[in-house]
Image (tube, rainbow, N blue to C red; front, side, top):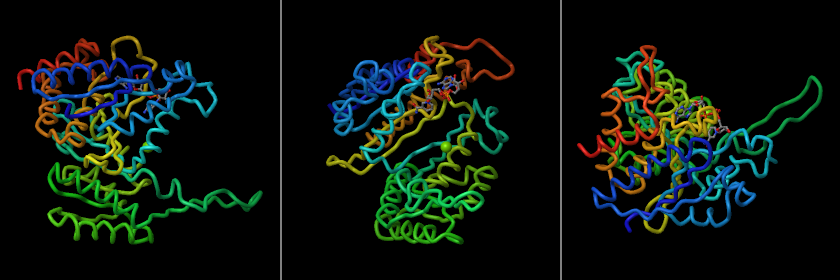
Length: 366
Ligand code: NAI
Ligand code: MG
């Protein structure tokens, strides 16, 4: 088969939204001749219930071999009191760590039909389609020294922002590779005006562009100005590449440009494998939503758009990814809404499976 995919539905609404992705995969296999080698396994609380660990060694090994891992969500009240070492999120953390996923991709895409859900005015966000690439394994969250020293009124809290040439270059390459599949435009954000790591970041990103990606149009921006520009005129950007801390803030801010949590996909990429494809984990931004789990109410779009990202960035199936995103756009334009997408005007929400079916029907018309 052409593409190997490991599906980890997880807990809560994870299996419910993943069932809709399975329909989409089946559709592409039947109607577009794509061949997926799909395997499915347990993660999170579901894996704990079966194996006493949130991610079995065999599952971890399989994740290292496939072209892409697609994860639903982990966690839930049944597991809140477990020992830290076996908590559901440890399964996800193990995947991220052992696959060395250093580039976190957070798209902010605003479908016209949902522009009124944005925190900003429709004129500013309608049609928005940007991608923030956040460095995920280094920077101030991990740098040494760190800790709290001293006593009483004289304590000092220390964290260290530290980046190496290799860490900056690899995330820059990831961003430039992604930009090649979009519009060849990248904006790098740091604070080279006040931070040494920012100076290095700017120099190394520029170096990778000059020596390896001459066709990329690269600009640099101070991250504080970047935050302003993201809410002033976000459509000026295509790909943004930034460090762990700034990326954390900027991607959360950008998420609010688009609307519901049920709509937001994400991906984390690692180093290229022998076949040239990067190690990759795709997942919706939302969690297991225990408040609506088991009720066929969850919005499957975040998970379906995560699969669209896999089509685009792991499998280089840009046309299929475009068609899937357009099918989502079409059903939204037709007024099909899960509960989380109901505005104040109300209406009748569709179920998880009805939303999936509507997307398949729109695909079939494409
Ligand atoms: P959450 O994202 O699960 O839910 C927040 C709110 O958004 C809830 O009201 C939920 O019903 C709604 N929501 C989320 N996804 C939705 C969807 N697809 N369609 C419709 N409504 C949706 O976050 P929360 O409540 O903080 O966490 C619940 C559990 O999920 C916890 O155990 C938490 O640890 C876990 N979690 C897991 C994540 C992951 O697997 N990556 C990420 C965030 C939380
Ligand atoms: Mg955050």
